[in-house]
Length: 257
Image (cartoon, rainbow, N blue to C red; front, top):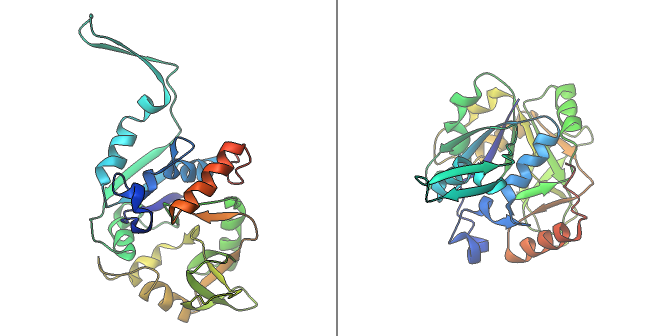
């Protein structure tokens, strides 16, 4: 099962750093948050990634093109025809497909563009700016058990995101704007989707969290996997600082590897 990561946004609310690099490449503990997300999936055996790039896509491509340079010791011998020797070469067991889905493409459009890399298979999907201690194996088991088109991880946090109205059988019936002190659950990403979802995305201007998911919800095909553990998106500089402090303490909840 492939893992699709949305990594093309501008990251305007953390512009202190995103003016230099795409948001998923902002580092937590000297490694991009994108790397942390991929390590989470890899821990559960999912190593085939499709990354939807957009803003400063070249930075993500260059990072993976030179991945071994970031992870290994290197000797440059300029007296010997610029010879380069790699020491203790380390590589992840990853296959990474980087797709430039356009600078101004909306989330739905980015997903639509990678359909050819998914084919007629179910796939995992998340955003390139959030970490979680979710059990991916249990998430997939839940998805397969109910048989609906989409499973979305839902968490309860005191921030403003699109709110999920969830029935007793975990069916998500609608989205709405979160209000202050609202105890409702929000979309945390970490989704599992059947390939039929592509039929509900029209083109580059489609916002995935609007028409496609709203339509799927109205059909009763959207289920919530309620996660009561840790989840944090890196939306602002303050969020980044929280994540940095957790990583530095050695107590980062999302680190299972």
